[in-house]
Image 1 (cartoon, rainbow, N blue to C red):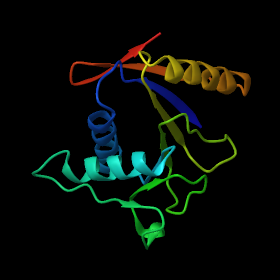
Image 2: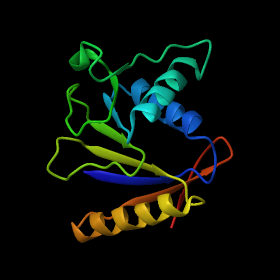
Image 3: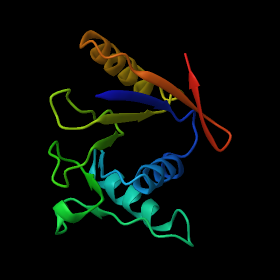
Image 4: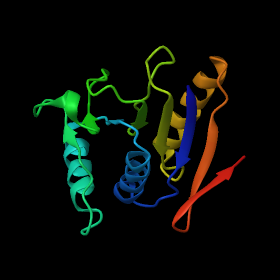
Length: 147
């Protein structure tokens, strides 16, 4: 599994998550977006519907029907009902190496002390498992590989 940590640097999660989801979707990847709460799920669900008015990013929220058919599925759960190959984790959610994902994208904000500390702990967990995470920072309209 590839593990990527993406530092939002106080930029809006809704925008960066939407752009990242669109990028993977355009590559033909199935996505699972793991979040830590129902309010966060609802907020990101709305963001995915409205982030680019001229486009459509097909997605659904777990438990609302036909989870297995959704190319992008938002969930609070730890399962993978849509058979995603990429998991995007926010709110200190994560994945395990024995799950069927090819890639984990862990989004956090280094300017939020709790988020930064959680990301550091997750980083150490992955390194202890023998997987060297890749670190990215939000910069301009894209990402810059750092470290």
